[in-house]
Length: 61
Image 1 (cartoon, helix red, strand yellow):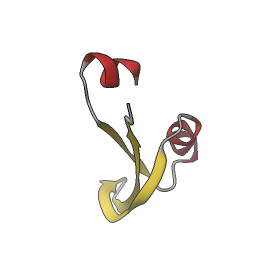
Image 2 (cartoon, helix red, strand yellow):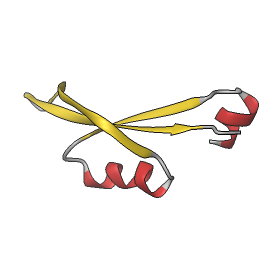
Image 3 (cartoon, one colour):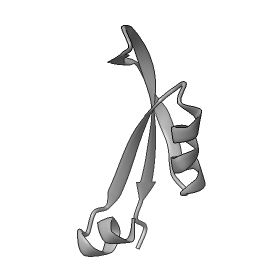
Image 4 (cartoon, rainbow, N blue to C red):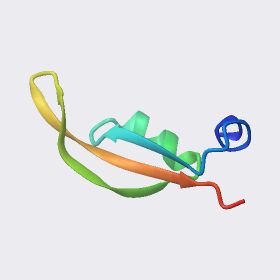
């Protein structure tokens, strides 16, 4: 995140995670990302469409 905000000068980072993937869901939650919403039926995964949660982090500096 330091690289994205300080070196690349990004204002915002977004992460999309499949709704049922508990291990991956913990990464943005531990890293201070805010849950912004859900994209329904966003990805075809193993012959089934799954929802994605969208997490965002904004550089306030």
